[in-house]
Length: 194
Image (cartoon, rainbow, N blue to C red; front, side, top):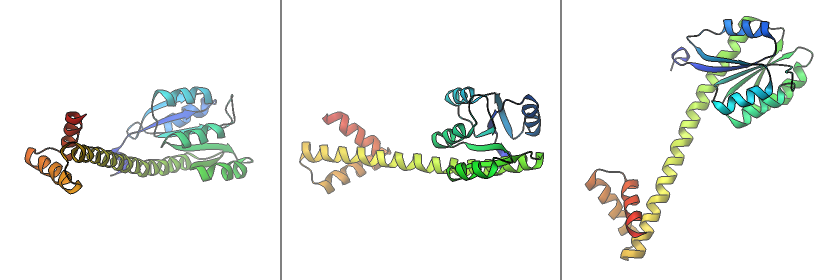
């Protein structure tokens, strides 16, 4: 999928009004929407509770904390990409602390091109994470189906004195005959014998 086909929601966390305006103008509306701007870590935390953002751009320092704790919290609690802007003198130390957690750090002052390239990197990373989240959800669904089918098998074994293979064949045949999933057949069996 072309990255330009997807809109990425962005949370800008910055106390600097001039930079907020520059960043908002720098991010094209056909690729980044909505763009929400908050001024401190507390407001950012509340914003993340209200909705998920694809990307968080944090301009340090913030009035209520430096910004690294917020960046680390976002990375650990969500699949959002995080871009941390730090003063050049703090860059080596901060980058060493947050890089292992998946935070992308850029030293200030920076250029519009560097911000745009960093945002594109975060968009690519967000797509990779989105695919991984979908795979995880699919695997969890399949595991839940297996648990339900196994529960139904044990009910058939217990209630109808079937063998495990007979119970398995019974559920498979019912699913095929009725053109429904094995899970639906298993749920009906569980409802019947519970």
